[in-house]
Length: 172
Image 1 (cartoon, rainbow, N blue to C red):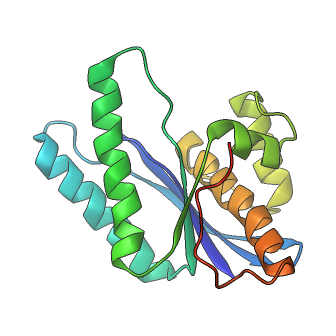
Image 2: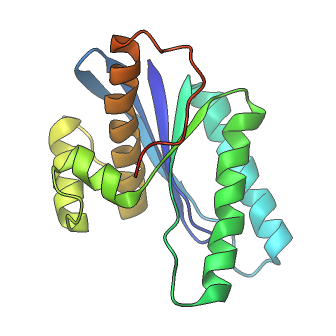
């Protein structure tokens, strides 16, 4: 099953595509969408959507997963990130792709084994779990971690015969 993970951001949105067959995970592709910061908000969000739509069309994943937003100290930054995250949730939904959401701690625990792992630990484990993967940015590595986390949960759903059941928001 082809899966795509997203690490949303207004400046940099990482994406990572993997194939999951049983316990076997295979790296497919990754990248980062970077809307021009000199544009107004609406134009940046449009560019983000268009970039995501292109990735979804090219790689045609069956399911998508998005990292949940944590609350920042700066409310304005939190709102802007929320707008970008909304676009990241909407793009796969417009393509008929089910979308799951996972907290950063759940992703880290799934990939590294510890919910408060450092970014470097996550990147190292992504490289080990996806041999031959040379991710293009830290945001893309985070997106691949989201996809890996989702693969683990998708396997559980398949095992219990719930593959076609509506996807619920992942537990914290």
